[in-house]
Length: 293
Length: 336
Image (cartoon, rainbow over all chains, first blue to last red):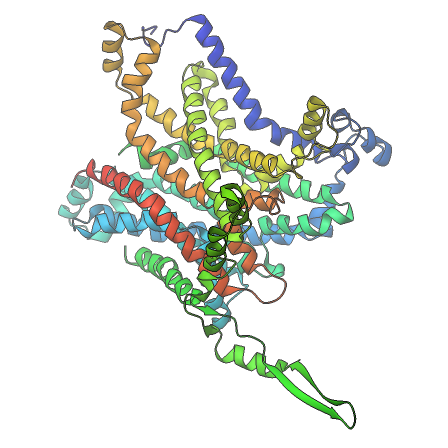
C-alpha cells in the first residue's frame, strides 16, 4: 500500500539510505577489520608502512609462506591456556543464566500477580539496585569473601553475577507476565489447579518467548562482565574477559599482541551467532520494558 | 518472589552496608618496633623495624582494620577537604584553582565521569534517534540485516569493543595512521594528549550506546498513531513539524526510559579506560575503585569503600528523580 505517510521525496530517501549505510560501516567495519587482521602477523595488522599490508598480508607471506596464519589462535588457545578461560566462561554463564531465570521467573510471576501496595516499592528498589555500579558492590563483597574463605572460586562469581542480574531479570519477567492475562491462570485454578499448577501448566507455555529473551540478557551480562570476574576469580579460574585484560599487561612487551587479537575475535564470535539466531527475541526484550508502558 | 528478593537483599543491599562499614575503617599500620642500640663511645642510635608477625596477627584478628571515622573520606585521595581549603584560600585566580583541584585524584575522576555522562548520553540518544528515523525508511527486505549489524556495538563485550577501537586508533592501526596522514603530523597520537584521549573515549561511548537508543526508538516509531500523523498531514504539517509535534511527543515515555538507562550505564564508565590504557589522562570513579582493589600489595578496602559510597551518593542525586518518574509511568499504565 503506497499511502501518503510512507511516501517520501527522492532526495530524502537518498539521504536516509546514505546515513544508514554510513552507520552500518561505522558499526560493523571494526569487527570485519579485526577478524581479517587476526589471521595476519603483527607486522601486518599493526603495520608501520601501510595499512594495505594488513589486507594483502605482505609480511605474513614473507614469514609464514601463506597469506593467512593461525599462529595467533594457536598461541592464545594452546600456549597461554585460553581454552581454560573459555571453559570457565561456559560454566559461569550457563549457571548464571539458569539460576537467574529460575529466580526471576518465580519472582516476576509473584510480583505481576500480587495486588499489594509494596509492589511499587519493590520495583523501584529493583531499579535503584540496577543503578548501582557493579564495581561498588564488588568492593563490598571482597572482604567478607576473604573472611569466609570463598574468594576465587567459580561458584562465588556465579552467585554474585546472579545477584547483580536479579533487578534486571525481575523487571523484564515482570513486564512479560503483565502481558499474560490474569484470566488464564484464574480459569485454570477454577478447573482445579493449584496456584503452582496454574503457573506451570497454563502460564509457562505461553511465556517461553519471554523466558528466552530474559535468558539472552542474563547470558550477555554474565558473558560480558569484567569488573566482577576480574576481582573475584583467581588467575587459575579466570574467565575470558579478564584473561584478555591480563594479556594487555604481559604480552605487549613480548611481541605477542596477536594472541590478544585472536582472543578478542574468539570472544566475539559467540555473540555474533547469538544475535544472528535470536535477533527477534533480543529486539523484543530491549523494547519490552519501555514500549508496553 | 521470595528467592529473588532474598538474593537482591543479600547481595545488593548487604554489600552497600558492607562498604559503608569498610569506608569508616582503615588498614592497620604495620607494627613497628623501636630498638635502641648503644655503643660504648658513639652514643645511642634508634633503629625501627617492622614486626611482621605482630602485624599479621593484628590483621587476622580485626580484618576490617582500625576505626577511622570519616578520615578516609576527607583525605587527599578522596574529598581532600584540607587541600580544597588551602587551594580556595590561596590561589592565583580561578584558572589556577581549577587546575590544582583537577590534580586531586577524586575530582579528576569526577570531572571525567561527569563530562563523559553529560556528552555521551545526549549525543548517543540523538544519534540513535536519527538512525531509527533513517532505518524506518529503508525497504522491508533489508531491515533485518540492518538491525543485526546495528546491534553489534552494543551487545559486544565492552572491554573487547573498546580494545578493537583502541588497536585501530593506535599509531600502527588503520585509523591512527589515517589520522596522522590527514593532519600530516607523524607524532599525533591519541595516547599522548589528554583532550584527544577524552575525545576518543567519548567517541567510543557514543558508538557503543547509540544502538540501544536506536532499537528502543525504532520500536516506538512503529507504534506512533497513524491517524494523528495523517491528520497532521492533511492540516498541512511539514515533515519536520510532524516529527516535532506528533512523533516526539508520542516517544516521550521512551525518551525518559532511555535517558534513565543511559545515565546509569554512562556514570559507571570503566572498561574503556582499561582498554584504551587511558588512566594517565582520564580516570573515572569506577576506575578509582578498581585501582584501589587491584594493587600489587595490600588491597585498600577502606579507600575503595569510601569512593564507592561517594559514587553511590552522586548516583542517588543524579538518577533518583528520573527513576521515580519512569517507575511511576511504567507501573501506572499497567492494570491493577
